[in-house]
Length: 102
Image (cartoon, rainbow, N blue to C red; front, top):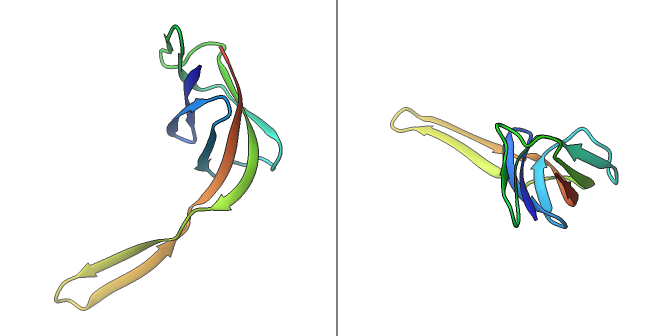
């Protein structure tokens, strides 16, 4: 059984036991969080929500909070002497999916 769930404005396809990385959530480590914005549940029969499946929930455990690899943002305008270099590291939360209920 799998589900498509919306977390922080992004859609993730998850199954029980999966480990996913999402944008930083305001939750403590080792605590469980529940997501009720389930857009689809698949398996033997598929339930598609309009826009979400009623009474469906995805339960996940917060494993850790971490930061993604650094990306370099480099802007340049040729022949103008304009160069700007910035780095960025996204704050992430690592989740482990515990249960999908429909």
